[in-house]
Length: 210
Image (cartoon, rainbow, N blue to C red; front, side, top):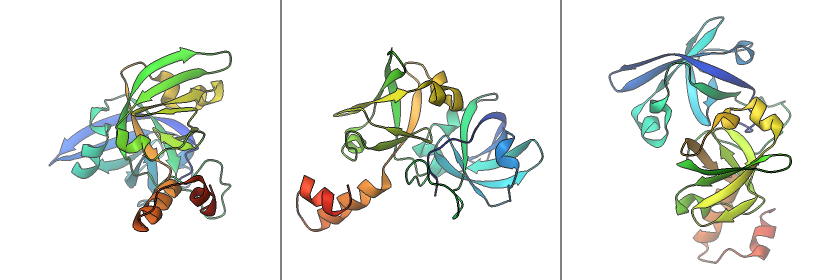
């Protein structure tokens, strides 16, 4: 379980493909402090398992199923990546519930400057916008963000200066791809309501705490 609060930007130090498995070595500092083999690390929003580490970097494997659902196979040496350790049970909860299971890959459609942020429009399949609500939460490359405008197949997020500084989203350009994970709580509500063969209404959302 993650929160979508990126702890550090890491750098791909090495990338090797062996027998349909991509082995990534990622250089970083902060998240190495209490690392163990087998730990779960969110890499651009995809939950990966630490296979080895040293004082400067850690290694993870990207298997075929993960590769097919993400753009991790497009990373190259020196690519920057968002990193977050799994949330400890006693930790402060700052974002929203994030599983690290990428739902879809979206594409940056537009970036427009505003008075105190950049407005980024992301294009994505309708299947994931159907799982969003305006002013709700969305995970973009492992970063917990608020949906400011929602339309069929696209949505807007605002990148404040701190988000641009602390994540790789400030480096994104029009045409770049991003990992998307819809709000887990919304998925459970949607599933529960669909099992009852009823429509999603404001009253029913309120019953589930939305």
